[in-house]
Image (tube, rainbow, N blue to C red; front, side):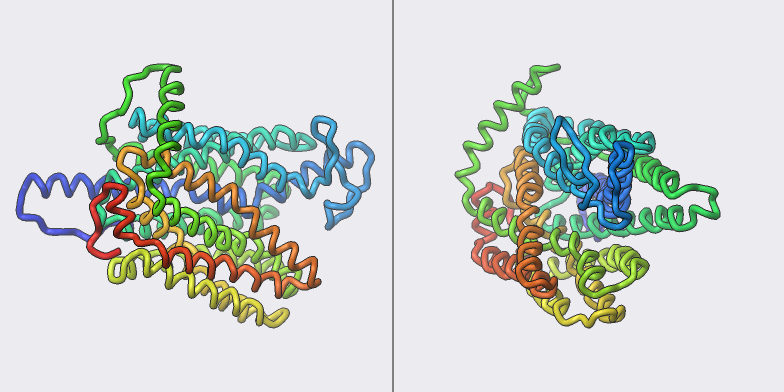
Length: 469
């Protein structure tokens, strides 16, 4: 599933090196499997609802009346003297987490590149994230402030580990191997995330038979997510081997000083790679469209189409497994037509799928499922090939720093799409024009990607060119 295609080589030494590389590639894929459980089960499904419930408990404890369904009305909480609705807490928390990551991720990338302790750093951040996730189980009653602190730690650990993880890709895969390896890793991640989410939903929905309350069932899911993340992280940690020499000789806290110097130099140097920055700008636009579709699909199905909650949950699961096959398909297509052409084709399909969502009839489950299948086919593949193509466009030795900018910029711009969706919905009184307005992200992204001369950008970064781009 995550094994790269074997290649026969007549030289024994080269065969041994290739066998070792294949082994590292298989191990590398496992971290996609391990970490995907956090965004899928925690961010998308369980944590936001649980956090809102605990925050509402705090409001009730102060004598407020909280509506059963709408936590945005008459249900205020306070932090540092500032009052705001309990239903807005998770949105504010995501914004605060992004601000924290603005400080942490660039320095993480710089230290990883300078020390080349990537395997060790991956483990540290993964276990910090998993540990904080396990501690979510301690959150009960009115203790939403504890949940806020733990989420900031867990999400920062997650994104920092992902930055280090992405930066390993160029070290273990040749230029011709990266698209397929990245696609297989992403596919593996969707499969793992889907299986873990299914297990967690079984726990939650079957809580009565297990003798658990709703809150206790969610806390069990938190612990399950943490154990999954930590346990499967042991596979890449045990099999991956660092190969690049460190760029500095600092020890202890002086590593941070060296990291700041490294980061400063990289930021000054980035202007020398305008084609790389051009692709990054294109990616940020269409990635915002992708993340917005993923985040508002349930809202669209609920409020605009009137679909029951069971259908929406089953659709989330289905998309996870369809995305597994979609990512593999994208890797195969990239091998034949190149990553750039495949990404452009994927953006065309995104445009068609989102346009089709406009015409779904209310309460029509079959049409909703059909559009969800289309989304699943392009969801993982577009991101996987963007990851591998960007790895070709960054200078050697600075992969972690550039990937920290890649992830951080993606996080920072991810609010534009939801704002557009909400504004159009409010202006028109319907989410149908709001959903179709997201087509703009894919059309603009397509035009910008088409203008990036990928071969020239790869050469400018000093990297070897793959046979097909």
